[in-house]
Each structure stands twice: as structure tokens, then as C-alpha cells.
Length: 43
Image (tube, rainbow, N blue to C red; front, side, top):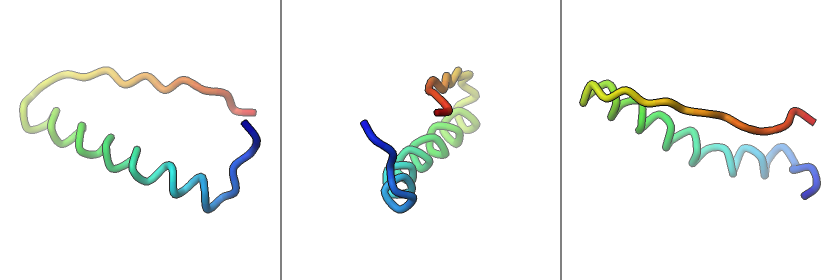
């Protein structure tokens, strides 16, 4: 897979950020403990 253009990157990132915020709210509301692991490469 090649490099993404900035606009494409942000379009793909936004739904993931929304999901992560939703999960954080759920964890706070329910008192659940969660572990999030980010895996990837910088280059």
C-alpha cells in the first residue's frame, strides 16, 4: 500500500477517532477497564 494523501488519511481516521471516543465514554459510564493497543509502523 502506498502513501495516503492528507485528505484520504483524515477521512479514514475520523471514524476510528469517533469509535475510540465512544469506547472511552462507555468505559467511563460503566466503570469497565479496557486496553487499547496501537500497532503500526512510522515509515
